[in-house]
Image 1 (cartoon, rainbow, N blue to C red):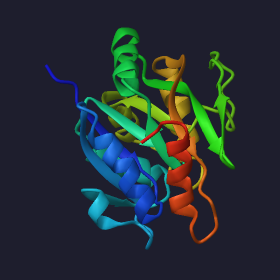
Image 2: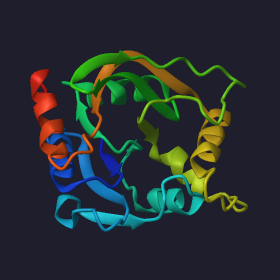
Image 3: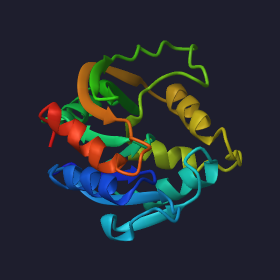
Length: 209
């Protein structure tokens, strides 16, 4: 049976969005791609659907849970260009299935000012989940667990702490698994007028296309 993944992306410029969505659509497991927050910069033609509201809000996470019909939900929280490494999503899915983790996160590369560096994250120990814990900008969540969170009868209506509340819930009902492998690249946006082109050019320097 084919595993399906629905992806949820934040707002970014048109060229960046096309680059990110083109990459995700090459992944066999990816089914639907959604645009989150509905800002005026969101290019509607790059994603099939939009979800309004900030990602940090409980109401937005509830909308994501309702919209996701895949076995897993991939959420990207960064505002930089995302590039998945070869077989990266397959690797995350393999680990998610083998461990039955509620959430899987991984190490990644970061490109800033034309330089690429490794950005390892750390294991999440039970009882040590801070509100500023660094999972990296990309997480894979078991959709069943996400829907269970959103379906709570007394789900708090947090405007800023929804994402943290979700992570706490997942940590109480399963494992948050750190995959100690560099699986994707995040490239910071150049703020200059030619920034999007410069960002995509930077990716090319490292063989990421």
